[in-house]
Amino acid sequence: MAEAAPTPAALPPHVLERADVRSAIANHDFGEVFRLAKLHGNVSFAKIAEAVGYKREHIGKMARPDTDGKGVRPRITQFHKILEVVDGLRIPGHLAGLAPRPWEMERQTAPSHTDDPSALIARGGAGLWDVAEMLRRTEMSSINSAALESIEQGIDQLARAYPYADADYLHERTRNGLHYVTKQLEGRTTLRQHRELLVDAGWLFLLNACVQYDRGQREAANLSKAAALRIGEEAGHGEIMAWAWEIEAWFALTQSRWQDMLNAVEAGHTADQTHSVGVQLYAHKARAAARMGDARLVRDSLDAGRARLDRLPRPDHPEHHFIIDPDKWDFYEMDAYRLLGDDERAAAHARSVIRISTGPDGTEVSPMRAAEARLTLGVAAARTGEIEEAIDMGTTALEADRKSLPSLLLVADELDKELRARYPREAATCDFHERITVIKRGAAGQELPF
View 1 (cartoon, rainbow, N blue to C red):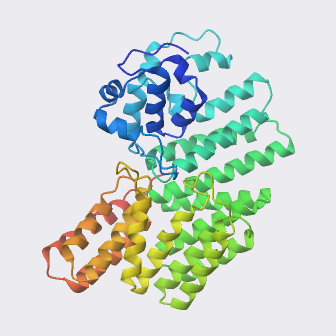
View 2: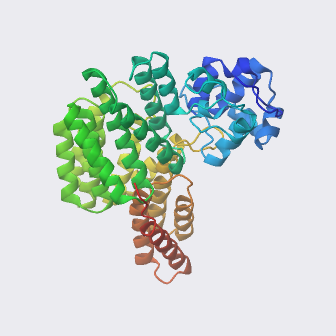
């Protein structure tokens, strides 16, 4: 590995080569990176703080070993902060799923042999998908098991980063993955390899649909969802098909198309009966039933979803977007009870969601859930005459760095209607309504290409 330009906290080569360090970097678990840097590289927290622009005390808190048994670490979630850490510790971009950093490019020498994958590795030029390309070259074949495994690991990392990572970053990395997998499908493969690549493409299209919808790209998201469904059908992969229908149900929910949503839920259950996607489908059904005022269907759907959830093993990585996190059940019940007018239960679940979504140092590991929980608390406050708290909760939710605009606006509209119905002449009500209007206007104008 080429020597990086010095900084106070540049990680020594022997630290960067450790498997636990690389795993922490790949998962953007920088608190663990800081801890391991001090333990194995004698890099002090003071030096790290100087290099990345944080206070030493904050670095120390982030690097504390997990002691509560929940496996939750504080997260650095803002993309520009991730870059500051990567640059400050001189972490080669490929280890963090990034393109080569400017300081890497400056120190590169002319390549001696571009077909030699070791040269790319030495220059730090390998991104998530470049790793698979290097592995393919080493055996001089169109694709091999090591390359396929590397692709799957890249997809897994992106799916686990979805709850907190910058949407633009996720969009870029997911598109890169799709381009790479598509390229491999054009090469020589066995029938088994072809199906594995198809499945990889299916998962990437699913993730891409979610990220595109978060960013306001409704038409592009529909295309990605349809592509995933088609791939699921071609590969005979029921779970991918079910998640495609789950995404359609989510789209229909945020667009108030209740019958379309119920149809999508049933299609999803038909496609797959064994994986955790069924839990999410039942939750969507409960949320739609609540908006239609059908309390009995809400309860039946929640009971069925809870029963399915209880039969599943607790996941090793609950943050994975396509593996249902048991802690998310509070989120589903919060939404249903808010819509049914059971403010006490809704608020209790909302506080639980915020607590679970927040790390020990106050960093939010699931900012999108926390934002909707704050809107729920805002609705409950508005209904009990606490307008200041309602506005404060709503404003904080709208300012979240990581958000899914359609889902956030769906709940924000509920708070807006409560405020305008109960306090129509209050200046704060008008200001909040104008804020939502501006966000909607911006979302409507940012439809971007695929």
